[in-house]
Figure 1 (cartoon, rainbow, N blue to C red):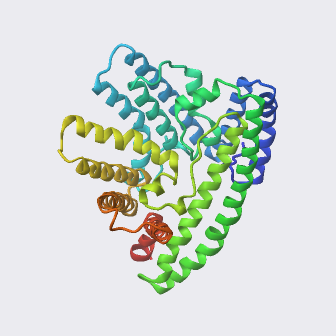
Figure 2: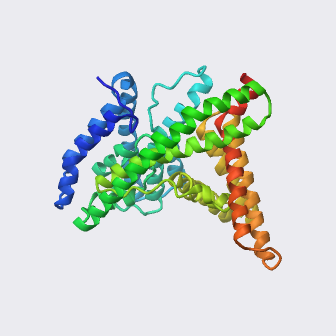
Length: 399
């Protein structure tokens, strides 16, 4: 059995075009072939989780069955009851597989968990989002088949973007008219070619050509050097163009299937501050963390009147949010330091914005200050990604 990873080689794209062609023809004529879409999804999941990764495929099947049963159970419970402890239990149960996968290497000498598979984090985000929206009464009906399609939607299964169930359900249950679908196809083609440029040209240059040279010079000089800082810039460009390219492929494929999956990046390197950056960078993830962790935590603290100061509650929210994000990436000091750095950057950004609001007459605002804000934000975020890359660990503790 062969194994082909999503959006990594020409064979995958050839198979993708062949597999999506009947879907495209059907949508052009106002029909959605749901059975065929399901078969194609299964076929591409087999390609992704077959062959040498068959054990991940088995883990995926078990995970999907478990989460479907959990969502169905909580939906039925929520129709008559609304105990907070039951809601918390449902959320905890939903994230247990992910927690096991994340913690196993820490306690098992680097070995991966047998229940892990590519994309488990992003599937967990989808499931937890559903449970929270069921609790809020935003999801009125539970359709196991649509929920299954949402969870295993193959274009975005491995790395997102992270969609929301109600938005996905609306697209899945409707067929766009021909004029709208033609525009979606035009966007899909544009995103596809832009993705090729990002991932296979620009990211290749930074990641495969430039980074090894910069890293070799940084290691040769040892300790802090200009080459260490340059690694942060090169890594930031490689990470952005590789991930943004992948996201464009996923969105393009979704559009061909008549699903308007949200974009993941929106020119993050022209951000004017750290907040603006997180509204542009990996947007579906940052919005997920904002809506389901930060906002709920701050609301809970306000409701319980833990603190009188809203600023203090917001700062606690930032610290909690970004530390969770750091631990989610991995249980290493540099991921945790990255989360702490981002939290501090957000707190400082908030403080500066409050100061500016009070002293508008004293602080100039023109093209020069805007350009400086973009320059400063760019450098701050590249340094944060230097921490995130783990290269400092290599320089100071491994090499």
